[in-house]
Image 1 (tube, rainbow, N blue to C red):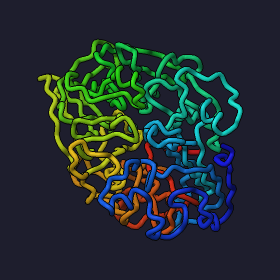
Image 2: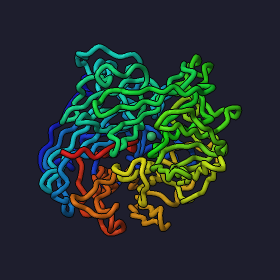
Image 3: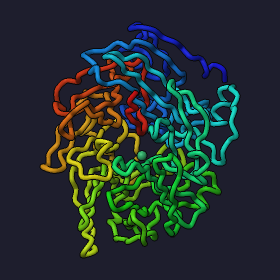
Image 4: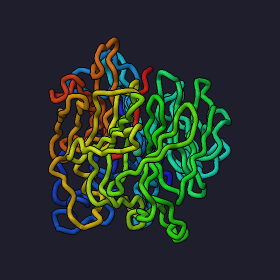
Length: 503
Ligand SMILES: [Fe+2]
């Protein structure tokens, strides 16, 4: 497999023309003979059987290092750090029928910004033992149980950058240049599974996680304290081994969503790659675990939707408010056993208001347009927020096969959305056709006085170049042209989550 390990080192503005990646690598619009398979299938009326391997999802085939990236506009000089985003990027696939998008080997894409320049771009696979073997490299660590090239999130905590995965695998530490530094168990304090979606409470200096594992009869709430070690573990009994992809945190509560997507032992036995299925017999409920200790209080939730991602949550002692994206139910992470998940439609933005005195949970639809990957200013996680950011990508909604066969709504596609969740309303920064946008991360301006004083950063595909740009928007002038577009040397496949890591 040595052909997969070639690492091009590209310098200067010529980098963009080299086409170091596969798929849409060549600049310019693809001609009819070069149509991505997904587009060709769509035009012919047939659905691409492997949409997560083509078009906007085409996996990168090489690791690239490019310096001094060309920029349109001006990068704010105060942005000193790395923008990192990860996603599945299958390595050495021999049979597409065995592929599931969510199980592709994790690849982190990073851009280093400094002094108004885009110093470098790098994309790197996370070196699990299996990835190291496929790349013909030594694996110098003791491989943890459930070892995996984590693909779902990349965060920074106490100066450590780690790639994360739910349901079993241990975090992997990443270095300055995105090289894998080995598995990380929080100084020996983590036993068992971790999660992809942590919540950091800045005021308390606590990193929270909800972890699950197929064979557990409970899920675990972990608190990693200021020492960087797992300081507290609380077991929460649950039935049927539910998938808990994300959760929410408020000042007083850990908000647990007990989803009707549960582990299916028969599916696992049959070799289904993601053996979690929609389970009509599993009630949907929301649990409030007091951070100060005490039993979980459960509230019945709407079984007609699948909780996907938390934007943020807060409480005022009387009510708990949770803003989140949800898919209409049923939602099947496993799909038909290969390729990717499928759902009844696209995710929307909702709000739960939990009335603690009356024991009632109310659901309000905030925005009926397709959107995912909601984010908030990180310093406000668990505290009252006004603004939130989300992304929409027509290519993603098209790839998610619909359970009822009705084509997904892709009219509202390719945009970043800024929500004003206090006064209502949105500002939408639209991108052209074939320019899917991925998750936007908010970076506060130095000395900024208001919540939205800062920047929204995201990778957005540029179909004219056949490559991705790192787009930097002024969050207070959201619909204006980007402050800067950093031109990367190749496409960044649509993926999952990421972070801004200040220098
Ligand atoms: Fe996620």
